[in-house]
Amino acid sequence: MWYVVHHEGVPVGRVELTPRVGLAAGELLTLPGYEIVRARVDAASAVLWATGVFGPPAPPSADTDADLEARTALATAAALGLELRDDHGRPVPTTFVNLLSVDEFRGEVLAVVRFADSHAGVGAALGARSAARHGHA
Image 1 (tube, rainbow, N blue to C red):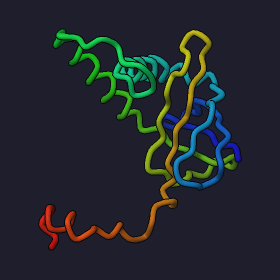
Image 2 (image 1 turned 180 degrees about the horizontal axis):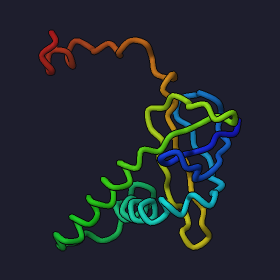
Image 3 (image 1 turned 180 degrees about the vertical axis):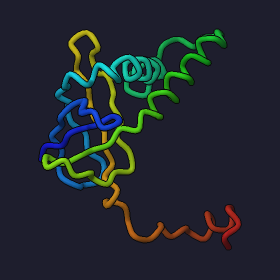
């Protein structure tokens, strides 16, 4: 099913996802509105790639300014407040909508979404050891 990712009411791209099934990802077909978020997505994506989340990590840095820039890039991207809408423009409940630049030179972007209604209605049961360790015995 096709969905539209919005930022502050502006459509930034379309993505085909399996409807309302847990965690889903697909290539975002960017729209002109993507330019509004491109710099923030690219900056946060560069940090994620460098930390090794999606591949080999970059060598560690002793540069505290670089660390601050990295944290700022991630926080700024996390605060984008992206939302998912169906083809009729209706909001789709999600836990999160994130964008990741896969190849900034070719403009490839991945949308990663967790549908809100895919969570279990009750929490997971803790085993006896875990419950005791966390004060729930």
